[in-house]
Length: 208
Picture 1: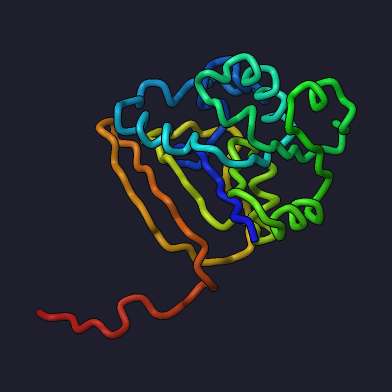
Picture 2 (picture 1 turned 135 degrees about the vertical axis):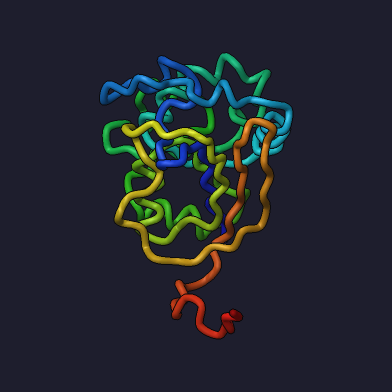
């Protein structure tokens, strides 16, 4: 069984759109592309370097198209991305599409059944970067084993978000946390059973 790990840069209000640069994803009139840059520091850079270790990748179509245009020409920065297997969830692309055929180790998947089949096989962890609609689909089918979030001290108001109302309820355990010099909270959460409920404060004695 392979693990699906979601890695995302988000704001306090959950926006994840266009963190890398102004032209990355301006869809929907998004005006704040590149909002991560002012928060960069050595701590964040070290975390990113660790996260770029070899893995396989599951991407939404839009993220895949951005990556397929960029990473084949910049493999010196992220060697593993060209060697790792890339699964792209799409009903528009097919295996013979020039973008898919032109980026080695790429394979089109068309739905949740394909993703489950890949997850149930043997191999490396499967990393999901960007791909907001794909992440929401995975959460709706309880297929996310770990969330690795970089929470930035920003409110952007509008933009693509990591979470919506469709996620399967579930508990996660915090396994790692780092705070950068610029106030970014880097946190890793591992899927851990069902949601537990109770009465807040029950069992505590209030002392006057």
